[in-house]
Length: 288
Image (cartoon, rainbow, N blue to C red; front, top):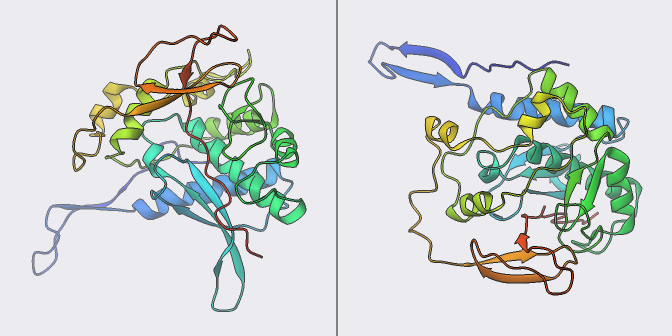
């Protein structure tokens, strides 16, 4: 399976009808260009990481949970024929200001929830148990409440990071080599997400010594110059945000809250407090 490296969003330019409608307009195919690659991505992950064991789902883009990357909802949809479908939602607020690798991790993370809902024993709503952590490791992702090495692998809110040399990174390498990308980005991500992305300047996860240039680039956010060229900016409809508290976590998992940009060191473990990563909101609804 291959992906077009340069997606052409233009159907026609300068289209003119008999009554003058659409003169000089550019028609786009944004819906298939956005959802088509995501559906193919799900299929590739299903085949390569889950052995084709997942039945499919309805992929959606949801902004309602600003601080989450996505969620899984069991049997959320039903067809007129009475067939149920699970939902996996991704938050487009993050696409422009966080690395592409984060979006790929989010989809895989939620697919693990789907796998566990079908073949395992999920924890209580919102809780990530040891079985979930084991299933994540099997596909090449390490569960971590901080999104970094040393974090707790069980708990309510959970992030993750790729295991160097693991199956997830191997599959992603092939995807990137085939030209996969997310073609469309939200131009106006919320101010809070832009600020958090700017504050979270920790080095990307260890991708292994053999990581390709494409994989390394996918682990980095777009540059400020690139975002400016794409007209991406903090949501102009939102008033300038007043100073708010940011959550910081140290190596021994102690949390503090303070203004953005503070420098603090833990008196117990001696490590620096770093801005906590957003977590992946998880099973929204596990009703059978």
